[in-house]
Image 1 (tube, one colour):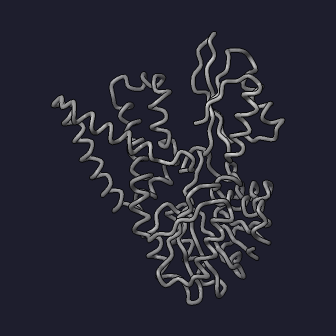
Image 2 (cartoon, rainbow, N blue to C red):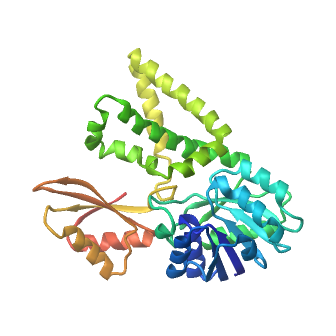
Image 3 (cartoon, one colour):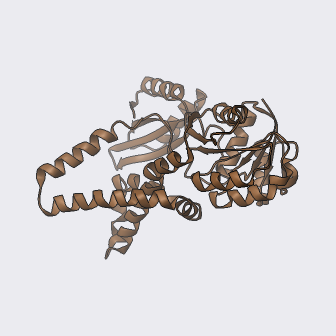
Length: 364
């Protein structure tokens, strides 16, 4: 157990960390620091923290673990503000989506007897701010840590304890490995999603096609709805790796374009089959930046109150629905809804209850 943990920035990630720490009794005292009074108010009301303050320097005195949960563009400036107030033996970590730039700067700033261990919980939500905080956000998510080679094992273990304690799966790598990996699996996909949406906007009459995009287009571009300011900072902070992956993507896109233009049927089929084969290897039961972990699809008839009835059945059994989405609806015929749960046990129990009630249920 930690004696005193300070979380600087009680937005979605910081607030969720506070909720998880307190729910699991991992810290005797959790202190929330934020410039936004509303975030601090919500943090106290929700029980994410024991106390709040607007003064990061004062908060970190006597704290063994400090979590900088601000946007990545603010991490080093926050560290600069508080470094002279850190107690001997304190460990500082962050939650940012890029590591090379932050870790390099941190190495130059940390006082003797204190340590910085880079951290990145790969979890998120369509929601933002303290209002969207969730104590189960990190369950079974990857939590990457990027310590320096000379960081004492006890300092690394503190951050591992934090990550594992909130339910995440800890992965250790270098800052360089981290930034190349997230550029490929997160940052460039976000840019591609944004480009797809903007392509539709720029096409003559393209916005009229939006109602037709409720299926594949909506799923493919979902991440484009993320916070633009946050993502701008991420792209600029990781610009080297992002540009490298964009160049690879551009070559692959041109390869597809040439194959289609030249009507090379076998090459098109080979490229699509390779993509399909590799895509199926992605773990279905791991949380990424968005979306829930364990999902089911329920068929429902076209009658009033059906969704409320399903929610009521699960609520009576104490099963929490993490997310809900209407997938297909045809008037007079019914449709289907997607339900997501935080745990496999919740998913299995929901399937059992709904099938007993006569619903058609498929696990995803």
